[in-house]
Length: 471
Figure (cartoon, one colour):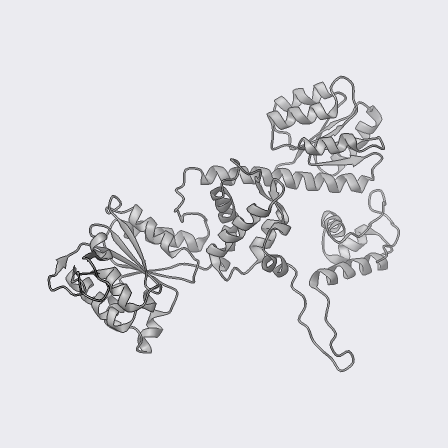
């Protein structure tokens, strides 16, 4: 991993060198400058991850440094430092795009934590930009978002079947993107210039669905005031997508089988057969083989449909694709044009990746759309997500009642972690090095945990004894 480059700007030579030396000990590549002019010149050379700048300096102050870096290198995080009691300058800096501010004098561990957060923010912004670049040029319907092994197998099958005319059966849970895959097969095949017609077989009763699919003649039934062309005729030369095929009634199953065998339809109330040339792609979230065994689905129709079967993975089976999908849906919401949202806070992506997504990709898209509509800042935060997703990130331990304490509710996992952290710190007498070793984590992770739970670690220089932490 590339070592982060940090620029320190302060006209106080002692403060500048102390800060630079502390950050160098943490393994960062640090460049220190005594004036705003020098820092801005360095910024024009590129490759700066973070700037720590004092506000009050000579002719070129910290706000000017901030503005110049935001103009020439918007991905660089900027933290402003102030030695004055008034926070007006710091607040103004935040308004102009600073990531954070610190009031002097500050604790060594405090600045280290802010630096880590700032660099995480910088990395996130750059990942957002990379995601947007990778998604640039994709059509809105494109399902080709994600690179998990499960989806790569789907892509391979889509590529192979697109050029042919074989019937395709798409299986997968609701919301996994079956219609998007069907559209991709159509759009990449020889029928792409002709019509793609979707039909939801579970949306209408069989009598109306028959008329929709095959058409009807004038007077065929009450209300049939004219001749109607069916969807099979409308899709001739193109593709007919039969979604939720497992909901089709027995009578319609027979008629669909005949159409597939003969490649001709007969309108309701008509006697003439009409030739059609339709490629059929069917989709279902049900187990058709089980329905065949139960006598609810014709085995001969199943075999007609099951020429090429593509099984779509659920979102929990392709969790590594969630960040890419999330950025894809963020882009679809029109961010960057009329909205100020640019990306995701790291905690938000963590929640998205740990949620089980019973509604799959469709539920993720709805969650992102909701978050964008509620967001008040440039990054989507956990508070912008639906409560079900937030709650899943801190599920309470299962409630168990005992004879000694009937009705007692156990702590959440987060509260257990917090109390365990405090206990270990007390037993180690505040020694953070020993506490981290007992917890099996490094010191940076210890500081992140302490910050998340609001635990004061005290100040122990380079990791010696610190005051015990109280709850």
